[in-house]
Image (cartoon, rainbow, N blue to C red; front, side, top):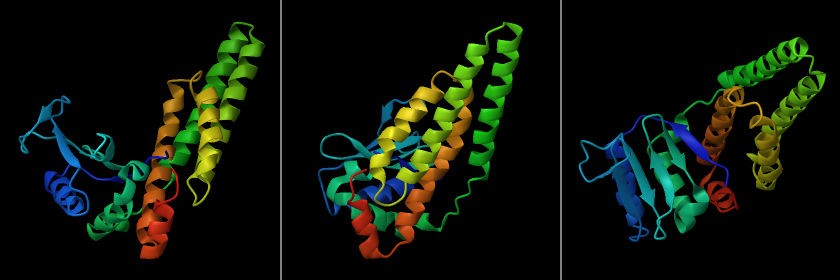
Length: 210
């Protein structure tokens, strides 16, 4: 399932209000609060992380100090009510830019290529440089496929996209972490598109397999 998210700081009132609104549709869901260290807590003042879980115990909405995370497939029949609640909270008014993501992707390609060239040249390992170039190509292809997969009806492209990312990013870690801002931006843009569409369109796309 493709992750979608929105930028926010942890807000205990927000997640509690969302939880109670969703319970009107399904009283089997549960709200789980955690401290900064990850320990469960019932004290709202100590909470720094929050999760809303379905009857099977799977998280379909989470909030931490940097973002809110939405898993529509795990939300099941609550997908449309969840989106409606987020829309009422003004989440759909956020602007999403790809500037940082584009800079990160370019920096990744340049960094791996330059360092790889210098290292392979000094150690007389031309094959290594070719392998690193192949990794860069796989990572860039993976990003492109994921961008395509985030568009409506293209979720199936996520599998080859993730495969390409794995093949290219793992051997070039930790430099490949520079690609993460782009992936985050794609997920946020997806959520904004869902929230800004008409109610019928929102329900239709939210119901698609992720």
